[in-house]
Every structure is written in C-alpha cells, then in structure tokens.
Length: 201
Image (cartoon, rainbow, N blue to C red; front, side, top):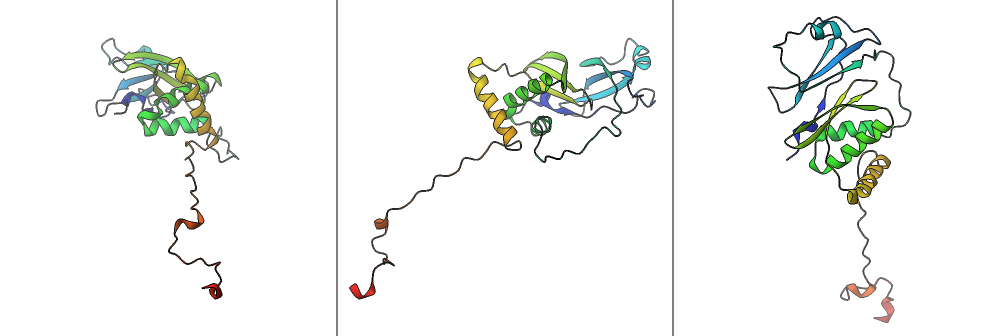
C-alpha cells in the first residue's frame, strides 16, 4: 500500500485565503498545510502576514507552516525546446502516481532538486510512517510531501543509477530487450529444405 503522505499539494494561490486580497509580487506570505477531512492527504492555505497575525488562538492548528515569498507566475513560463522531461516533471509525475517502488527515487530526485536550488525543504514532521519532508518549489510555490525512506548506504548507488536511467529515458526505466533465439538449421527435420534441389530427390 502506498504512503498517502507523499501526495502532491496544489500550487500556490494568487490571493489570501482569509481576505481574498491578491498577493503582490515579492510579498512575504505564510503557507500552511492542514489535514484534509475529506481525504488522507493535506490541503494548502496561503495567507497574508496581516491575516495570519490576526488568527485567534483557538484557530485550527496547521500540520506545518512557513513564510515564503510570492512570485507572480504571469509571464515567467518559457517554452522548453527539449521535449525530454525535466527532473522536476519526473518528480511531479512519480508523486502523482504514488507507487511504492518509486519511493526511494522520489526522495533522491527531491534531494537533487534541492541541491540545484529549485526546491527548498521548509519543514519535516515525524509521522507513524517515518519522517515526512515538506519541499516547496522556489518559483511556483508547489509543495511536495516526500517520505524520507532512510535509504541504507549500500543501496544509495543503485537508487542513483535508477534515477539517472529515468532522466535519460524520459522518466521511465528502459524495458530490457528480449534475447533473440536463433534455431539451428536442423531444428525442424520434417520440413522441406528450400535450398535443396528438386532434381536430387
């Protein structure tokens, strides 16, 4: 069974969830995650600092929250001339599929993107299934919840190899080619030999 905490959370909102005021490019806001009562995942709420400070003491407590900078996405997207999936696109798809066997790969991809300054770890929480790390995309504000699989040192190299193979094959592991088995000439002795001259019969 897949770990539901590794679900992908929707992108950053363009307005405050409390005041409905549109955010300004470069504005510092608060992003908070709350358990979703209608599913096993989490819902995201983006709120301006003024509204966050005005929340009553008995307000619902978030699972995780942090300050972030709002970046206006308008006009920031540039077409990618290469059709090959990027590491973040592969991570996005693997998180959406949420397959058990890609858990290690998801974690390695998240760490790789963090080192490239595309993702930043904003928080980590201890859950019954292990440590859940919260990553935010620095430009889009997308949130990825990734369980830390605590990969043994002996397995790190094989997982990294799998990640590199995915990057080279558009996000999928290559299917091994089936060996071609050639039959010897006398495999079917009862069948006529097309090279045999009819005059020799």
